[in-house]
Amino acid sequence: MMCHSIVLVQLGIQERERHAEEISRLEHQLAEASGHLKQSLVVNTDLSNKMAQEAVERELAQREAAEAGHRLAAVKAELARVEAKNTELNKMVEERDEKLSSSVTELATLQAIKDKTEAELDRNFEETEELLKQSFLRAVRQAHVLYGGLPTSGAFDLDHEMYQDRLMPSAKASALAAQEAAPVEGETGKGHEDNQD
Image (cartoon, rainbow, N blue to C red; front, side, top):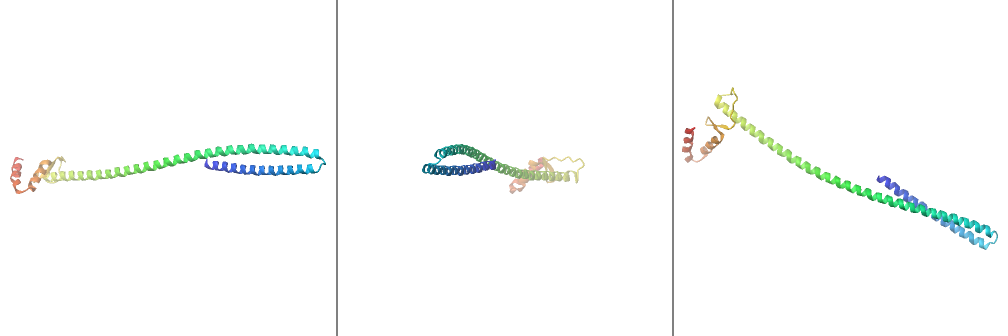
């Protein structure tokens, strides 16, 4: 579309130059006609024929000048149309560039979200893997104590933990382990709780 507009503009410029040359040629012809008229005034022979001929030449020159003026007006109108079309095309290009810039920004945002989501998925996978590993190790510890090796039934309680070769709820096992790690004063309480179990 842009090339078409450029071609039209170039054609308009060439037409304008052609009209300028034609007007110059017409002016030259008009100058020659004036020279003939002066010569005919000086030379009285054939005065009426020369005057008639010059009148005809002037009329033709005026017609050509009028036609050239009409053509020039048409070229100007076409040039104005081409300029309007060019303005419209420039506006379309600007809008396209704005959309492209918006798409690039949106793509960058989506890529950042994707990267964040992938990082979060990786983190969740690692946490899940660690949780499964700890659960498995808990089951293995229970199996070792309960069955003296691999169990035949496979019934493990994931909410229980082994503490001092005894199976008990995980929370209680954690509390006892914490008491055991506490100062000596906590030893009496620990022994009392063990007896209750």
